[in-house]
Image 1 (cartoon, rainbow, N blue to C red):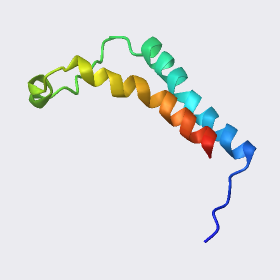
Image 2: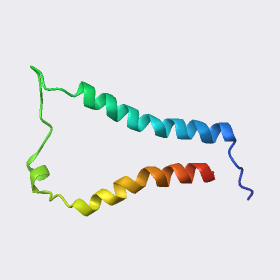
Image 3: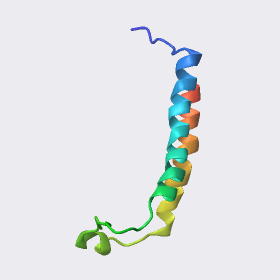
Length: 73
């Protein structure tokens, strides 16, 4: 079975979609303001899950990993 290499245009389009995530996060921060009709989606289970600072590392490394993986394609 022969693997087809995606075109450069396809790779750049994938990277563009990946770049949309940080920009959506910016808009979320701007628009997520408390107002008259605010609902909390937190449940009791949320308060039982401990915060482990070391778990931040995989999240930070995720963006460069995906960017590099898409460039290899």
